[in-house]
Image (cartoon, rainbow over all chains, first blue to last red):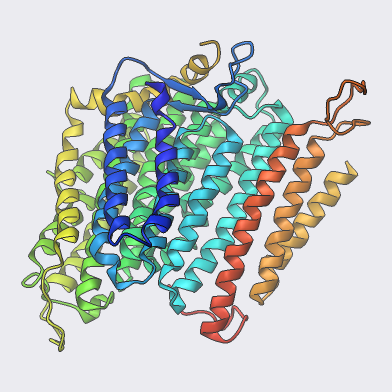
Length: 512
Length: 112
């Protein structure tokens, strides 16, 4: 089975190569082919998620055998957390590519759009699969360079400005990450994450290591848009074409930012109080300030972008609390609950924020504006968009049968059990403010009287867009099943075990 | 130690350029300075006192080679930096066509 692992990287990269060449001669090739590719990747990732015969699959690139049990080649590793992330990436990219079939017809250069899309997905799959630090940097750059180009895809004033801002900050982040990798290499003389981990586990927690960790937090924090590093996110996410906004907000900041932070700080560095405190503070600050910045926005996509910062705060908070409990030697089950809450919110956020951005794209597609003050009364004309966005809004603000409620509940319960009462109260307050801002979104876009009927006739969006929105809305409801035991054990628990059992990652790669 | 210090000064020069310049092209140049100082740092950490280029051959018997892995990493990173710089400059050209200026104080449509 391990020999199928490189397909996650090879297939999107090959598609990115083939689409501009063949798409030039065959009409419609790019649209169908990209959807087929992502559907296939979804099946493959589902297979890896539900197969229980092995905890960890590894694949050595180039067939280089390990020397003394330590891999010398770049290795691809696939454990519970990786399978979980791969499923999110493939699912959201399938729905976004399917949605783009209708949406992107307004733009020229369709071939380039799908090629860059596939390149971005290939880069993200590489980041979550790789077991080598420098290889992680290379795949991360593949993903972000494609996303720079996709943000600027509209070639308008705003898009170019947003892309420039994103590139300068993203370039800084890449430099910091490369610098951190250099520091790690200097100290340990190896780049394999498992090998670095086994060397660092015997080392002292000294100022050198702390400096390296802070460099990594700054670098990946910039990519994940945690609060002091968030300046690029609202511009970039609101200026990109809507399927790309859904990908950036739903997947990219998680796959290259949050995932890397989680993987490196749980499985590579020894756990420490300082770092877990920093992670909790970053999570809390982005959770609270993000939502306050979001309430005042009138541009739909900008409002959603600020909510991404806030919801990422929940994820980081959940994971950080789990880390803190593990460091202090507290109850393992509470730590597991907290991390499970964080990861559960991560998949939920990918689904409902992807859906909300697709809704915003549908509204923009029909009315031609993103300003909440200029729209209203759309519920009559666009029933599918209205009902799906109502579901997503309830999910993000934590209303019961939807998935967002359960993940927030788990995080808040874990915070109370771990005696972080203040953080639990903050999480509840932020959830209420989120509800308020989504009530505003619903009221101004779908219920108010339409101010200007205009000459353009507004109707429901085409089939492909409807299909993606309905699919994601069903997932919004369906993912709440993850809370039940039995389903939770097959999907969430392997991912949590990969993090809780910090030595398991090393022992399953070295000396296998 | 002196080499690391020089490398750090180069990094600070680049950071100063990015933070204080108003011209887009100068910001890009500052970013390139920062990138190159990082590459220099990677090269320096692979250097071993008195080492030679790591080329194995049957006739020469050197025992002290410099570490080749950072050099391979830097080659890869330079290619990546080339791609990011090309992308940045392409965006800069497009921005100039739209706004008619390189001044970032005048390119401020997005706020809030």
